[in-house]
Image (cartoon, rainbow, N blue to C red):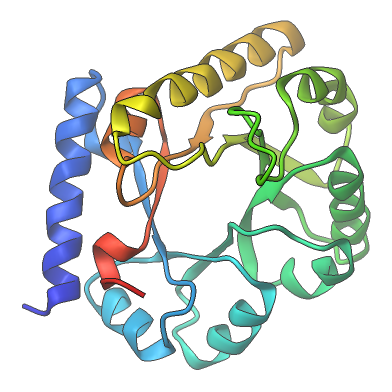
Length: 226
C-alpha cells in the first residue's frame, strides 16, 4: 500500500470516528483532497486509491491538471476566484467553495447562464473576522441572502469558512460552531436549504466534523508536506 493510500485510509477512519462522535454516519462527510501545488502524478495516485474529489486554489492549476488526469475526477475550486477567470473555471469545476461577495455570485450566475450550466457553490464567510481572509461578514451574508437565493443559475449548497490558524484546535471549535449556527439561522429565516458546511483542514478537520462539517478540505495529511 502506498503512503497516499495508507493516509487516505487513516483519514477516512478519523472521519468516521468524528462523525460517530457527533451522532452522524461516515457517509454524511465528504473528503476533499486538496491537491494544490502537488503534481498530476501524485493526484493520480490518490485517484487510484479511490479518492474522487480534489480541491485546487488556483484556476490555472485546474486548467493544467484536468486534461492530464481521468475525467471521473471531481474538481473543486477552494481559492479566491477572480471574476475574469469565471468563464474558464465553470466548465471544469463541479463546485466553487469561495464565493465571497454578491458581485462575484452575480458574475458566476450570469456566465453560468451563458454557458447553460448550473454552478454549484458555497458562500465563503469570514466568521473569525480575519483581515487576511476573503468572505462575507455574517452581517453581509444576512443582507445578501435573498438576492443570492434569486440567482437562477446558482445552486447554493451551504457555507464555507477558513478560521484563523491555531495550533490548539480547540480554539477553532467556536468558529466552526458559529458557522453552523449562522447556517441554521439563515436557513430558518429565508426558507433556503443550506445543508453543506465546508470547513476543516488537515490539522482540525475532526473538530470541524464534530461541529457539523459536511465536507473537509485535507491536503498535507494525505500528500505530505509541500
